Length: 254
Image (cartoon, rainbow, N blue to C red; front, side, top):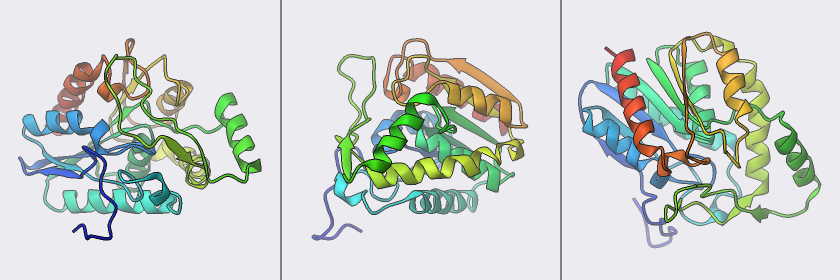
């Protein structure tokens, strides 16, 4: 419950849940973003009869200063708590994530082999790419808590992600530090994977999707999002993502 001392949520940043049928869909937003970027996909799952949970990760959706003290352990714990609560009232569960939400989705799949399938939209899994590696090295040398933001990388004119305008450095370094341990565990993912990738992604290198496809043990279905940038769930290919994600979820939980 929000108190008078709690910071106000950004428009559309509130967590969202819908009770539906016996199959659940956990939908996870990305780094510095909030549920606004994933609400259309969550609503598509709900319209198809799924029980849906779209949580707000700690430090997100209010002001960037609230995110500064948070770390990977905070976001992963919150994602797992949301999954556990959803799984307790559903017979089967699929998980979908965008960007860091995809990282969290992969992490959950390594810990919960009972997950029926995962949907990854421009998921971050590999920190060892030239651009990101160099950027992380630079950030480690900075004595700055905030740098320019990475949100709202969208090709569709007029579509805006309500992400933070700045990126908190220490949380970003924490996310980067979680990637190598996760990468070593990807081979343990045996559930079906729907992997959706934007070739023109200015936040996550599309090579991250290639690594996921090569590393996981389960069957991988790939979709190229030709017309969209990073936040593809709010971009030109949003309807395609929703259609393919719902069809995939229905198939792997049948």
